[in-house]
Length: 88
Image (cartoon, rainbow, N blue to C red; front, side, top):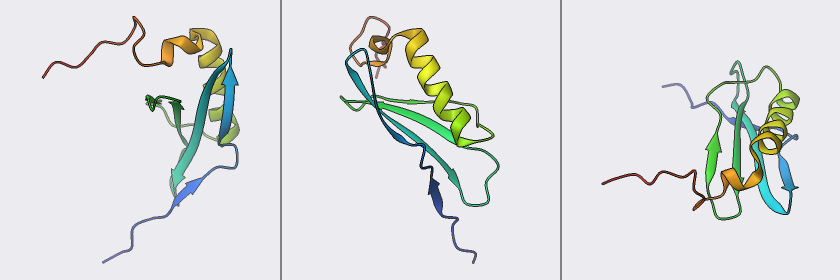
């Protein structure tokens, strides 16, 4: 049985504040993996994960900032008009 790979967290992961809205930007990959995953988490716990992997962690961080600035930080906060609740 092979051990599970370690999770590598990039040093580019950090807290950012855009227009007064705080985000935790997490960039990580599996040890031996091909690309970096990107996740932005809002203060209320809303998590946004990008589908695409990034060649390097710097590119992932730059994409997070570009997307948050382009869409506006309020677009990522739970409870905004852009959020569609899941039906049970």
